[in-house]
Length: 72
Image (cartoon, rainbow, N blue to C red; front, side):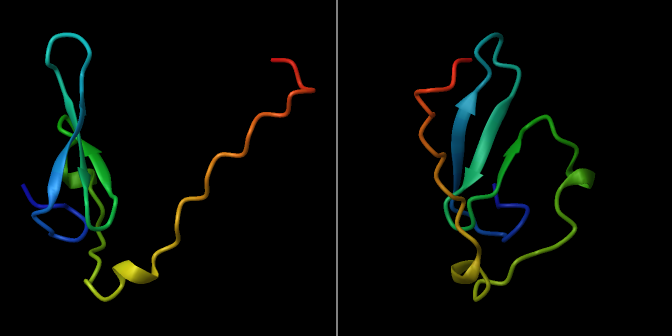
């Protein structure tokens, strides 16, 4: 299966539904796009990335540590 965003064949199953084998989530190892097997391909990105654009993509920032003084 090729990535819907960059057309790379380097995709893998990231996770599966915990009950009933209903869906899978795939992720692209090249551009980090992820999608669920139950999604309609019509709603996938209408844009495509060129290979030379991928190194310049923004990096997702790390989640900041929780403030120990704030109760949830």
